[in-house]
Image (tube, rainbow, N blue to C red; front, side):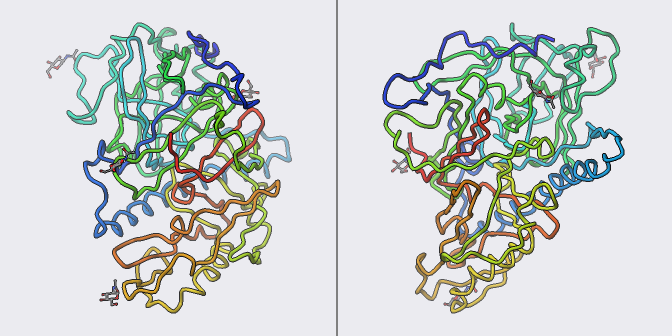
Length: 463
Ligand SMILES: *[C@@H]1O[C@H](CO)[C@@H](O)[C@H](O)[C@H]1NC(C)=O
Ligand SMILES: *[C@@H]1O[C@H](CO)[C@@H](O)[C@H](O)[C@H]1NC(C)=O
Ligand SMILES: *[C@@H]1O[C@H](CO)[C@@H](O)[C@H](O)[C@H]1NC(C)=O
Ligand SMILES: *[C@@H]1O[C@H](CO)[C@@H](O)[C@H](O)[C@H]1NC(C)=O
């Protein structure tokens, strides 16, 4: 039960900053490393391999999309049915989706701290890592190169008991309980066939504050995974759960960091040594108080858990609002939009997709067309004459008069030397639309969970 204790900070790190900014608090910061970075794959992506790379991304995005839709679809149908008073329980062993996060953080767990590289995923609620606990004949599922959390060597590791109420509330916990003191086990299944199995525990994690100070967060629920498999875990030791759920690291950590977390994603094709960051606490520092941050409401409807949904009011291209039926943006009906760090490409529900594709491609018809599935519009620019200002400005209008205008390179993407594509996909209809991490690049995104607000502003993701 001790996992219910709030996170406690050994060092008081989250003082309001007395400097210039009202809301500035000292924040904890993690470097966000792209999966194509040197630490993970050894080399940046060569131009001739880009198309293959995008096809892999799209493939994984579709798996993830399918799972998100299934999760939300089931709940939506459940509420429609609940008129007669029937309650509805989600099957806990099959609700996970493939996390295809492309950004990683270094994470320290245990006492003394052991270091891991985890996928940062706003769609996952469980934080877990490759781990061994009271294990004699274990093999390392990840192979020799994978880091292992040796739980027995951590003095702060405390398994959640399977007889506890906490165990029942944890996501994907199993009902098997051989003895009251046995650890609470989970079996996390993902849509793409990946899985992670292990036991839940209370642990301490060590984080570094923006001041450089290291603090310990106690009472964090982690998963000690004794086995796992799946292509999405190829490069990581586990997953850092940033979803909107009571058990996620993000929610626990932000409770003690002003209610906010933020991240800034660098271009996924950027130089190897470039990195963005993930931070807990306010995104504003005294030096950028007068920031250009815009805000919109986060939709905190339990039906949308654990995703971060926003209310889109329209999309304009070249300053002209596109004729897209409102129902496409309505999360309480069959549409809606989520912001997802674990999806790469943006997928728009078919009616929105058609309108956007046609408006964006109109001025690009002069270039020779290239066939490059799964993208519907690719063109050859090797003959010259292409300039970014030929592409009309895409703007996503959000509730509260906020307007998200990503840079052109985030939606007209380079898939090969001399070939560009409109890098948005169709999500069919009815469907929830997803703003993926490529469209989110070069922006700072601040999730204010206490106030139910999403802030964003252009950023180079620098220090
Ligand atoms: C460990 O593995 C060895 C050989 O594979 C086997 O003989 C032994 O019984 C195993 N021990 C346990 C505790 O499983
Ligand atoms: C999450 O915690 C809040 C506040 O403690 C509670 O009201 C809510 O029911 C919890 N949600 C779930 C899914 O347990
Ligand atoms: C990345 O490397 C390039 C050259 O390899 C260098 O010019 C640049 O300053 C480096 N950037 C960072 C953030 O280290
Ligand atoms: C693009 O056009 C050039 C000629 O301008 C041609 O040589 C090249 O093969 C074309 N590339 C593709 C992918 O069609």
